[in-house]
Length: 324
Length: 100
Image 1 (cartoon, rainbow over the protein chains, first blue to last red):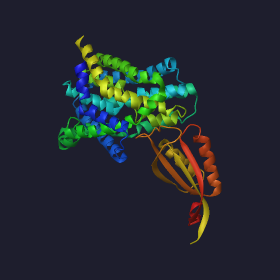
Image 2: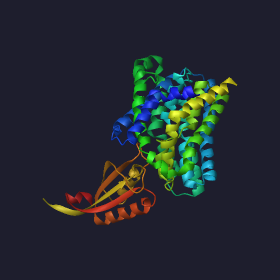
Image 3: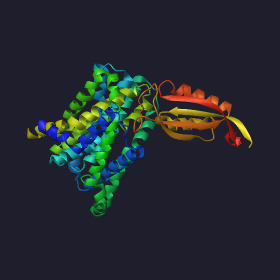
Image 4: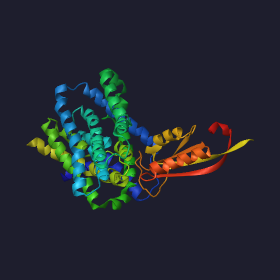
């Protein structure tokens, strides 16, 4: 276990992320220009979709069915479990609980990519249809948590229908789902023509990912000061909830027949918290939920935890389950 | 040059509100508006934007009556829960008839 944690910490992804955080801690002014940040995130999502679509074309329906059902089950479970823990044990209000639960019910695409890169480096190639599963997990968690919040708190914010439209037409969904369809349709020959640039195992993708993680380190690092504002419960929640969801995810994924690599990636998806799609959706639907809580928990606690330590832990859990 | 005295309403808000504010400006009688990306800090701390911390600055040239309606609505809808500031400036506008 210690050896795997060490290997992960010495990966370029983790090191670049740590460097970004460090830059903020020592108050360096450095920051990726916003347009470049957005550009790289578009590239990463499109590449993920395209490559995932090409590989999806090779997958049989039978191979996908159980993993897909497992993913949807996790998408329903994680917002509800998060909400109950926050409300009952953490004693958070309805809107805050639902707002944070929306983040933990959804998924972080960057954490997903980091998990994929990690298991590939470990020699545990994940199933090619994992990006397809990612699209299934993006939206249900947000909507279930927001629906809980809206029902429990009574109408206050914006109607859920508008939020649904916003999430489904957001950058993540359009590029991922669109990329999957394009990748699926274009076939192997066309893929070969562009794979140098879009191959998620290739050097261009990995290089861009390092740059993106550097910036994510800066973004997370600039939130470290807020850790003092959120209290010990949320700090513990931001680490223990991913561990719980990761363990459940690894178990369900293994039951559904995924390999060690695939189970690790699905476990990471269940453990991760969204910080791109969820915040604006929560902000407008549950306006009384405090953004400092949900942004600090997902961005400054859970995201660094998963990148630096969580992914190798889920990998170990998946390996143990497969050995049984 | 001939100028007309009008009001410039400036609203600095979280980016998630941009579309909704823009729609209500039209509804309240504005003929157009300008949006600029901004960033800064205030009493509410963190913004739910991507990347986090951004704001938008929305400017609109209107008559005194419309300016009043805009400020009332912004105050009622957004001041309680969002990071928003709004203020009015007296301005002298060229081609003033374009705005009312």
